[in-house]
Length: 104
Image (cartoon, rainbow, N blue to C red; front, side):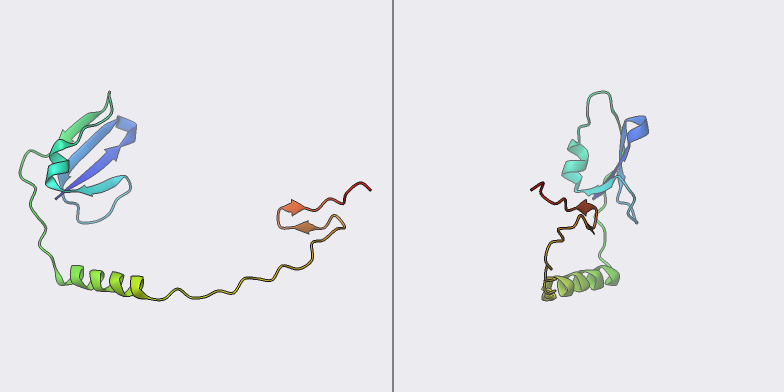
């Protein structure tokens, strides 16, 4: 596994060992995609030259996975819709919109 990080200001993509924490503009890649990555014309790639080691799962990884499965299995809470009242016809404001009476 590897982490791809973009540095937009420098038009650079950095492919290195798997990061231990998330950062903006960074993405985890498998070794095949890390080695085969191409960048837009005019960009530079800085690539780690060693082998990308597979991460060893930890107890925290297993707990995070179990929490994600539990969260996905929870039924969605039903939130009843708010009944709409009659539309104001006197030019009153509703949020950021204004009801304008017809010119009759």
